[in-house]
Image 1 (cartoon, rainbow, N blue to C red):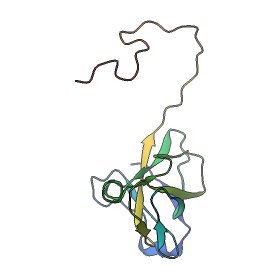
Image 2: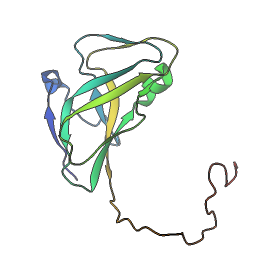
Image 3: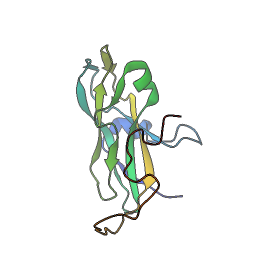
Image 4: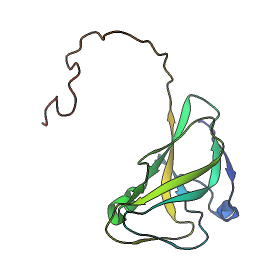
Length: 149
């Protein structure tokens, strides 16, 4: 099992430390480390501190900040950048860009679970410039080129 080094930057997280909610969970919950309730109006974005910093160190790993499905489905709250990417050498606080794409105001409460952190493998490739590619069955066929059913 890999180890993730992290620092608590908001003392309120001492009793709510990052953890997997279930044995089968892929993501660690990130919480809104805001001091008071914040109203997010439709169309608004807000950069929310998570109260933690991580350091993966291993360049073969990265962390993804992903939206919580319940917030997205029930309230229209998704990530402003859709997916956040944390490189292995980043050591600063994790911030979550929240976007209200819904039609109603959303009240963000202090320490509410707002996103998930998922650690994934990374493969860095050696770039090889070519003048053309070997032919494939698909070629350059893009959106919808393989049919809809």
